[in-house]
Length: 66
Image 1 (cartoon, one colour):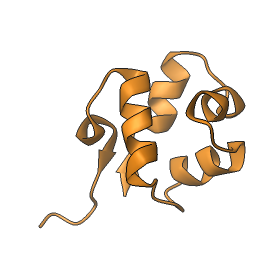
Image 2 (cartoon, one colour; image 1 turned 90 degrees about the horizontal axis):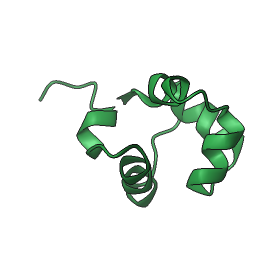
Image 3 (cartoon, rainbow, N blue to C red; image 1 turned 90 degrees about the vertical axis):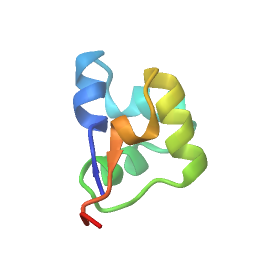
Image 4 (cartoon, helix red, strand yellow; image 1 turned 60 degrees about the vertical axis):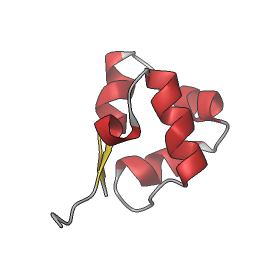
């Protein structure tokens, strides 16, 4: 799954640790999501969307064009 988490985080000048704290996850989780090694749970995707004021689809995109 592709995502814009790193770009959105950088636009706000947040570290991975700061974003992790805001989303109530570990910094390692943020790192893994940004690198595409881990897909967020649906509740985490909703929290990220609310935090950034975007839809889930604005942040996360499926890599398989179905």
